[in-house]
Image (cartoon, rainbow, N blue to C red; front, side, top):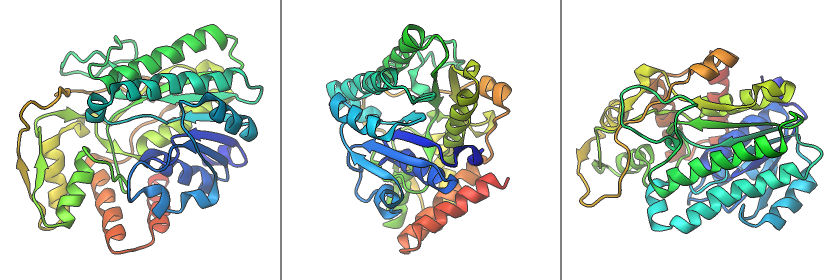
Length: 348
């Protein structure tokens, strides 16, 4: 796969975030010519900065809501492939700032699609959304790509809207297939370098490294957790396949195997097994904003279309996260451990 990207011009929105930084690392290793457009890194510390991602790409700091700034960067990059990751990605933050969440996640998608529509260089566009775009009925089986889109909270709903915007642009402006358009709906990701608040594994690392109990708000909620490399390589697969043949344009779920859809409590137990001395407490938060209790994805489509499948089970994914975190806490070489884990993933 990575041979395909050697020399390709790739434009990534949201490149300074957790997933964006790992994606830049993969593409730089493959020989791609990468331009990133994003706000400043969203956390301190940030994976983007400690791994020195900006040294090997063209990094442009800008707001996805600012169309003129985005288009200037886009036109200068003249990308063949566009990967849209820029978003306000936190459910609880969306309750605090719903207008900003919609502006970023909906109009940001409109803006990048306008850049694509007015270009003569793009062949492949992928919008990265989320498993939370679905109308969640809390049922026991996985959602398929043809299920109803209607996220509950402002974050989830804004990503449902981002999906619908992409569908409309695909039908209205790209129906001739000259530019292939897809979306990818991934589950919850874990991995080294995520320093966000209100995410369970970063909370685990922070608490364990400070010898505090890990606080778990809802240990019984089920989520499709997977290592960050799983969806990133799925995104790259979709972008490559539709670049070569637009018939592969469409909407794809990207999630773990059934056996790896675990509760938050089970996830934290696995973490504690691998981090000596770690422990956790269940402390329910009164009047907490609504979050889904049960959510799974049916990934039959991407498996049957491309032969893609997850490579690391959940225990391995947590193991890689713990390995990365201990390198970081010991002031080790972050770029080196990222390269090592990417190679291990590919060598399976």
